[in-house]
Length: 64
Image: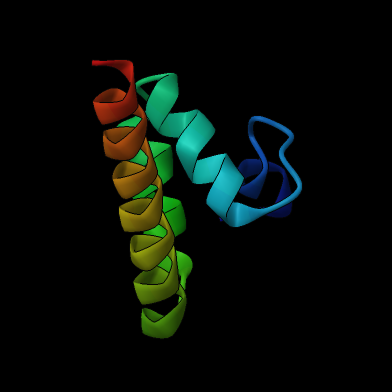
């Protein structure tokens, strides 16, 4: 993947680029970026995503 393709959506970090790609339903780009990450980087991103999910669930509970 070329540097221009790495930042198709112009974000500064691979993690944000992946989220923007997924929000744009650009699964191919998001998957390609994930494939370029080291296993530890993917685990860290997964952990951060789990934390976001947990925070969203807490907010939902607070809204009830």
